[in-house]
Image (tube, rainbow, N blue to C red; front, side, top):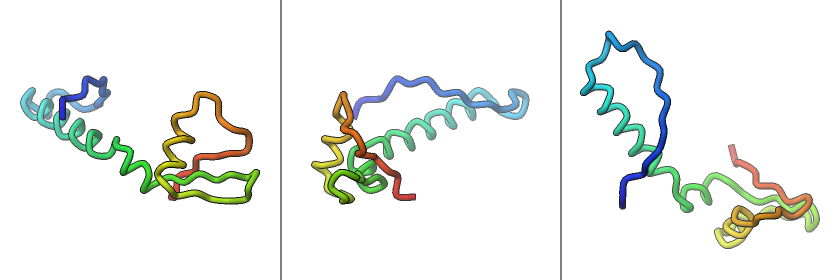
Amino acid sequence: MKPVDRDLLILLHEDRYTEQQIQSAVRQISEMLTLIETMDYLCAVVEVANCNKSKVYNKRSVLEKAISRKAHKPFEFIIHKN
């Protein structure tokens, strides 16, 4: 997997940490985000509620279609399971 180029904003006291500790923390945070920013993880934590059909879908194919649509369907919601 290639490294992701992203902007992170981390607030900390400069005088408490060395540059090496800061770079290590940034690398760890980036690795954690890379692990959870996958379709498998997303499918595990969200579901699609379709109020038109009165159904809730957990299938990966339905989730992928709902997320990738440019124009969302009316009364179809992507809901976090938490």
